[in-house]
Amino acid sequence: MQEIIKQRTKQIGAEVIKLIDELPQKTSAWTIAKQIVRSATSTGANYRAACRAKSQADFINKLKIVEEETDETLYWLELLEESNLVQQSAINNLKSEINEILSIVVASIKTVQSTIVNRK
Image 1 (cartoon, rainbow, N blue to C red):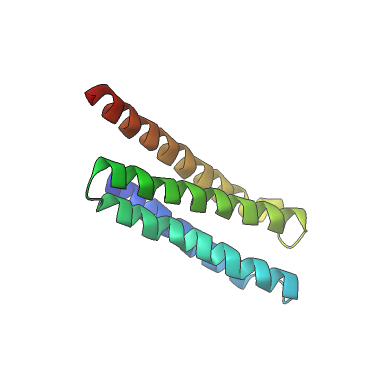
Image 2 (cartoon, one colour):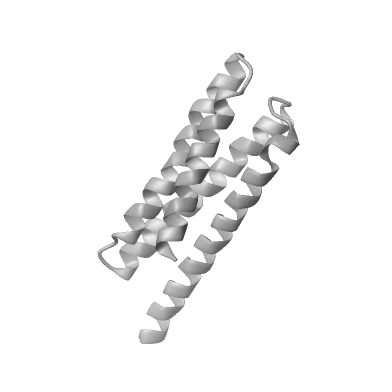
């Protein structure tokens, strides 16, 4: 499952990169583009780091970063959409995939946390 999530989070970064290349040449679009590329690519990079965590606590902390970056990516996509810099139809699939990854990450955090609590 980890390899699948690694691939999906990397694909999100690639899709966002393609998306920003299609944005209009406006200062506002350029500013958002820099932010969304950082958060979207950070999602995959931090998930990979979580897979190499040294402990369950380290894993949880790294997954929380993934959760934050994933949610931030959704924020920037929503802002692009609400400011009419992209059409909703252009980002629906991407938003759906990001929401799925976010749900998986949150569920994983809860599962590992409950495992730690149950061991005590």
